[in-house]
Amino acid sequence: MSVPMTAKGIDPGLATIPFWRTVLVELRKAVGTRGPWIVLGVMALVWCGVGVVGLSVGVPASFGGLLSSFGLMTRIFVGVLAILLVTTEWGQRSVVTTFALEPRRERVILAKLSAALLLAVAFFAVMSVLATVITALRGGAFDDAARALRGDGVRTLFDVLMAFAIALAVLNTAGAMVTYLVLPEVIVPTLLFLGSLGSAADRPGGGLYGTLAPWVYPREALAGISEAAPGAQDWAQVLVCAVIWIGLPGVLGVYRVMTAEVK
Image (cartoon, rainbow, N blue to C red; front, side, top):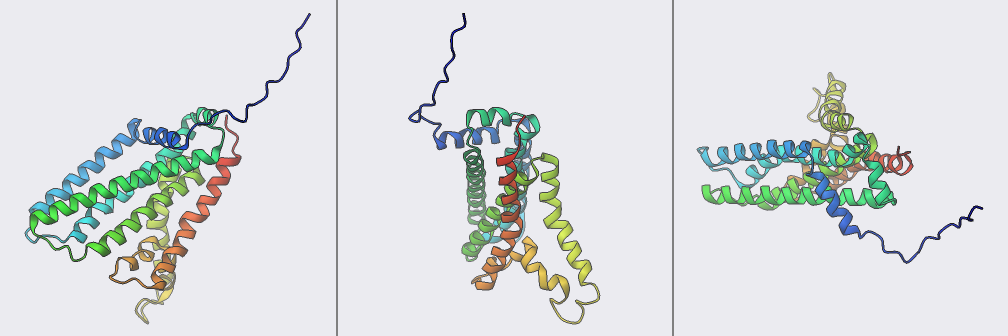
């Protein structure tokens, strides 16, 4: 004789995993495999190279110049770490375990985003300290510190958010990296330049490149905020570029993650 089975109800008062603990787990994932450590090792070598050059050149560099030198490659590496944080689990199918432990996918996305932002802030703080120490040791100038911190800080934030959004949209490590490194920095300016041939010679900044690049090409869009006093148009260009490279792929990526069948 069989015993009737009864469904066990879910206790609404059952404690859930704290969000901060999920963030810590994602931070551990960000540096818990071989790939991120390779990225960190290469970034450390780049920092050492920049530091040696900064200490040995004849003319002392300013704080802003050193910070830009440190940030040029650091932004790329932090973006790569953000991509690996998102896509590695989907490539290895370990995302099944992640969503089993935390079924609320939106919390997982927010935890990964928080971890990526914390890493970006940490690396930006370290390279700012390095730039400060080298500038002080060489007797360099700090008069451009405010605009350098603003410009490089916003660019670092933009790059890590763009990498994270692209990773969500693609959900594949190789595809996300190629898209992040090639599409905004190579393909877009090349197409704009080719579209400007024959029309930009009539006036400075003319043609397709001069018209669209400040709104769709991240390097041009973010150049204005490094000035001493960026205006409303400079911030508007950053906002439009952010909508294109962060907002659109981010919305697509969140939709994909929330609706994807995990198996």
